[in-house]
Length: 424
Ligand code: PLP
Image (tube, rainbow, N blue to C red; front, side):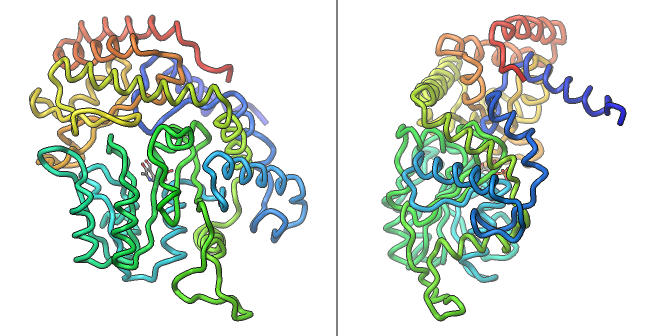
């Protein structure tokens, strides 16, 4: 077969784009050579419906072992008693949990998408808002932070069956204890979606959701620095509170409901090549150098936030505890759309983002979201963060000056040559 140069030329171009620019999208990262190697391996050829040692296909002896390694390493990393590493993505992980524990029409309570929440937490354009009855909590207009007493008030008013915490664009830590108290007060289950800060939680830099949340979901490709994918975890398994029984009449444990929520509930065959890559990433995350990495991610985010504030940009909640921040550009008379489109001309990649109480549409937005996970993998440190904010400010303040934009782009391309990526 002739080489498919159309596709491989495009992959090469994308590789060059990643090498030349400054990557600040908060949900992205660069995986290691070994994670990449596992993902591109022969394991992609294998069907393995079911769970290790309980498959519906022959020839699974080897993938049983690699999937078991992924499970065991995830358990060790998060101190979890039960893990399912099969969800193809974060959205699939959340879908599997909801399918396992909710009936269509049940009430759910999540963090408002327009305040930083995720689509799968009840948005009306998503399965979670179409199949279930969502209500939302948000941030306070003055502080940009969540008021935990108010979340409880909404829970007591709405009486949801499931409360979801976690976000795509919230820069502060979560009070899981207060949320569990709210859940207990109304007999709800509490789900933490830690997709964004998972790496910082694994290394103990942020509050531990496992202590208080019944179920925890995450993606594996953001701060965790693994392949694109998802997983579901519990610190402790427990009897399901809905009285669902096995054919033999025994009460089903929550782990059994969640396993069925993934397969056959929402997925077919697991992606064993991706699961092996998850195992590699978890092994890396258990090493001392990963702890140093997450510390640097957090320090870099704090310096980025301070440098923006020094240049009179408005950060929602005035700072960050994790790897990201949301910047309200209204005081600079700019939109998120203009910022995203202009910064890309200088090879700086960010994404436009709604800010709480935004008056613009999701296609325009008043804000941008910025994260430090990818640039930290690349080896950039605190002193480099102020330089990045300097470039962003220069580009935004000269968004209609093509000469300045292209000069800045050249400077950035030269600078990035000092930070080679992996060998793939
Ligand atoms: N949950 C949260 C909090 C997220 O931020 C994201 C992705 O950005 C997801 C779930 C969905 O993950 P995926 O894109 O892998 O479906």
